[in-house]
Length: 208
Image 1 (tube, rainbow, N blue to C red):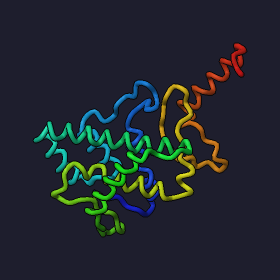
Image 2 (image 1 turned 90 degrees about the horizontal axis):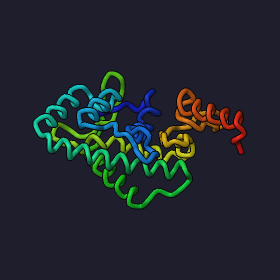
Image 3 (image 1 turned 60 degrees about the horizontal axis):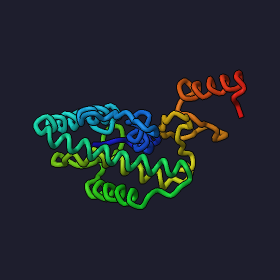
């Protein structure tokens, strides 16, 4: 699997956050799972440009032939996503991530780097993850590499935020505003809801 590091550099850097956000209402008591099948994960990575069409087709075919193995791979992927999510929630809150979570990311990263290579095409050079013999584990390798790059970039690491929605949205994002004032994943959803709630409280004398 490949992704370019040229004009899509920020996209590749934040792939780990995109993976972490594949559950809705992630910070609530009842998160809604987005990865309900391995096929959904494969389709999503293909759409993100992480998997090529040929790679996605090959892994989907393997999953169709081995439903039990595919389900085990899905659960493993979800567990790794939760590890990534906890690490970046801690970073967003200016806390140190749990050592067990860092150990897991390092474990997957070491697997990734042991199978990493470079690929050249007419559009430039790109990372190549795994080969035709690589199993389902390769689906998490780009996320581990992305997490390592984001965590070691001091400027970008300082801009990691978690949506301030009080209902548990939990979305992680980079605050790219000039004054570093972004609080919500989107003003159209969580931002407007918070604004409406403040207005209601003010109108009814419920504000602080």
